[in-house]
Image (cartoon, rainbow, N blue to C red; front, side, top):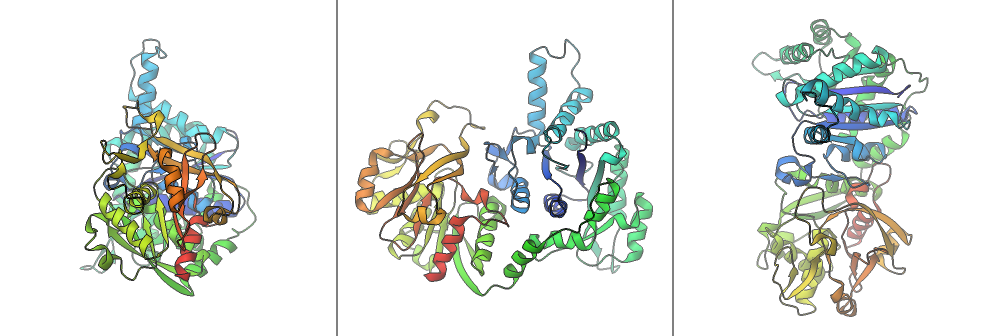
Length: 534
């Protein structure tokens, strides 16, 4: 742990202020100065992980290379930094308590009464230290989920208080993200909610070093001084965070506010160079000044909450920049689609993406969208369940298997072209038991899949229980839907594509999890490239 610095990011006044984006933006600035940085998320809910949470509850479940089902903020961390996260980057209250209870059952506490302090807080501190002790990072940023004052966040705040006392004042700092609401009746931004939020934090024993204040308009100098006076921080540590046109603006806004400089000064870090954001600015320049525009449809069952497909939405932005075009996404609820409405609903789209999901709700609408894309030569990308829908549609309408389906949707189907994986048949517990994390895939030369990646061997992240039924593979390939990507160990079909279609690819994995600002995912980039030619 020697040499590692720790930054804790808390939130106050209200939730959804953007702690994840602020954390990722600060990390980007520090990384651009040459520091090795990682970000960790501490989530106060009692679920072990978000793997069993409904997307309407928590947005998408993000998956890491090592198979962790995590909070969607880890997606922001990876997209901004281009550095993979792991099991250690996301910790929940459920996991903390599970670990402590398991230790108690094993007799590790030698008969002592197990309590929140010190046992729960000690486990939280142990989790915070793990990343710093690897020796891989100069700085570990830890985002604490929830809002200061929440009952469920108290053990985390107390653990941070203890941790900071243990490691010394120059090795840590606390950034508190807060809100300055504007009252039209008085014509001013109000600082009182921020004062109360900091007071609550102080009552828990934590003094913030930096305040990042969200606002919808410029914060006058006098109000910054007022906030600094009442909250015990320096005026230059009151950072303005205005609403941004895009999340990718935030690192530059924080650079303008000198957030990274204040952090470096307070942590007594040595950095004589300014952040090199040349590539970041280039990305933003193309994002804001595209030379073309393309309209694609995203067909899913959770489209009311855009965060349910956050990584896909961001991967499409990256792909647009790669092609110097704006990607205009039309969000289409799969329950609104059927054979009678699909043509009207999807009319005018240059590309169709059928999104992942679970369960049979809206499945027939997805299948209708696949058929429309196939028959009208519209570029198509199917992800996970989207790929499986493509297989079902082809089985029904090309192979003539009228009952073709997935066993997930129809356990008694006569033609289970999508079947449960062999090692999943005896699984009864839902949490953390799917095929998760990165698995290898071997691509067939001469296929569209191979041309996308330009290499024979890739590794992509998975999250599924059902797979293509290889009993039908020969029939599919004879009819024109080929397997262009196969897992070399399990023979699992990873990629299917149509031979006689301009661009039609379905993938069992989730390519969106690996798309970053610096490296847009090739599948999304080629998909958008194909739509520009359509």
